[in-house]
Image (cartoon, rainbow, N blue to C red; front, side, top):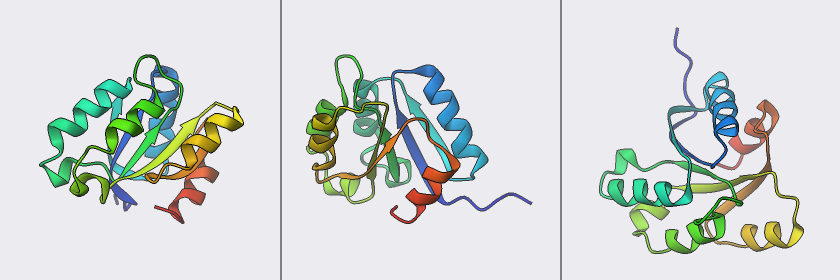
Length: 135
């Protein structure tokens, strides 16, 4: 009776708890992922990846990353992410999930080699359907 999940693990990285709650619910309702890990800062997300980099099953398939967060924002996260081993970077696709409409920020972040897509908040059934074609 359980729905087939599209992917194993997602990492949601956003400092907004309401957004995390809504996005987790949309992901669950769409059976998008078996496991959803939520980190409320870029720093805690980097620590999570660091702690799990030698455990392939714990590495997320997709990271939903907000751009605008205090201290370690999306840009700093991506800069630090480049230092992870290929075993992490080859498994994970990064999707920017942001409310930013700053064209300069958007252009700068989608040019990153590890970013596969940019979505505007909030996550929706339609955006997940679109994303399934990419990830």
